Length: 216
Image (cartoon, rainbow, N blue to C red):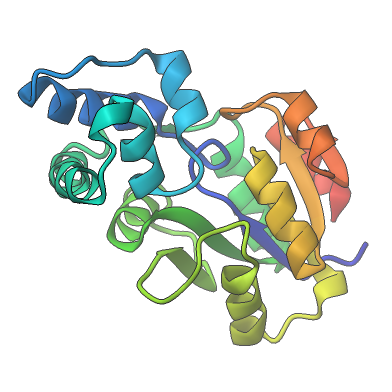
C-alpha cells in the first residue's frame, strides 16, 4: 500500500482509557447524588467527545445545556488530575508505534477527547514517539466524524490521501475515514464491537496491533 502516514484514534485504539473515564464521570455524578454507571455503559457513552459523554451519563431530565456544561467542567478538572490511574496502552501498541517510527512511517493522533487531555496522555505514555500532529477536541474544529481533523493533519504533513491509513475502534472513526477519503482499519480490542466497525464501512478489521504492520 506504500503507507506514509498512520492516523490513530486515542481512546480504545492506542490507550485503554475507559477505567479513568468511568471513575471520573461517576465521581462528579456522586457529588450530585446522581446514579452512576457501569464500565459497559461507559463503553457505549464514549466516542463523541466529553460533552456527549456527560450528556449520556446524566439522567434525561437533567440534560439541559447549563447542567451539561457544569458537569463537564467538573469532569475535566477531576479527569485531568487523575488521568493515568487506570489508563494503559493496549498490549502490543508500544511495539507497533516503535516499529512504525523505525520504518519511517509518520504518525498522528486524531481524538474527540479535549485537547489538553489528549496531549497529556500522549506525553505520559508515548514520550519518545515523534507524532507529526496530536489533535483533540478544540474550539472551532468539528468533532469526528466530521473529517476536518484528518484534513488538517493531511495539510500539515503534506500526505496524499492514498498514502494514509486511519486506525480506530468505533463507527465514528470509520465514518471519519470515509468522509476524509482515506483507508480505514477498525480495531477489535477497543470499546466497540466488530459488527459496528463492519456496518460503518471499515476497509480492514484487525484483532491484534501487530496486524496493522501488514496493512502498510
